[in-house]
Image (tube, rainbow, N blue to C red; front, side, top):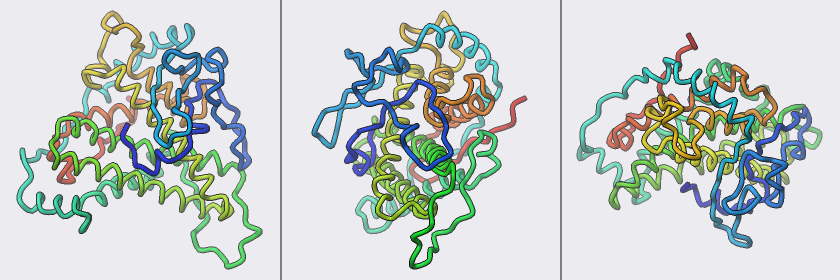
Length: 347
């Protein structure tokens, strides 16, 4: 996954995808949510393992850029549960009737091409701001977030008194903000995933646009999270460290989503959703069960039941957005005509 350079500069101490349930705490502390280190055995945390080793991540030590590989290693209990989940989700009409995006011309016109050239040359930015507003619109949609049990931390502002030494984060703020960050990152990942689909077949011009979108959107997301930390009265000396920890969690989340769609939807998400049990290839468990497991392990901290309604709804929402993006023409993406697919209430 091509991420912003700042993300890759973080030393990966705790970015493993945790498959075991984690206790939810009401204090501002990282310890209960700490992901297992690379030496943790696969027997203790069976959901993910590194290829060829009984550990879940294989990092290149002492280097800022490391080799990432995620391999899902589900238990027999998980696989038995997945059978029912595949049948349940394949009948969800919201994954069968994804509305098409607005029509767009085959190529950019001269004005759109000029704006792209100016943006690539770093003289101005006519492109990334649209995607940032599109993503943040989801963060501000409280009703939609509430359908997935995600709440936006409110009640504090960035305006702080000069001597703010007694201010501390509220109880439960750490996990609430981490879940809020996952929600933001999920939409950043969707934009990144579309960019990655397009960039594979692009020349220098299109590839430069794609690289710029991902870089600017990721860097903007880290600024947003930093401001959230400041707003929640995290001590100034700790904000940088906390931000690094959040970046590690987000990288593990994005890497797991990358692998889930690569493994389960190599021919497209719409086809993967309708795939029958006898059509699954060796090692596949179904797109929806795999994506739901990633969301359960990260966004819900492994602390809810696997049939939790809000977890299932978020899995359907994510795949519905991915199906719509896969059908989005490249020109519509480059010319800022991308929109989110609506998300009807379950019938």
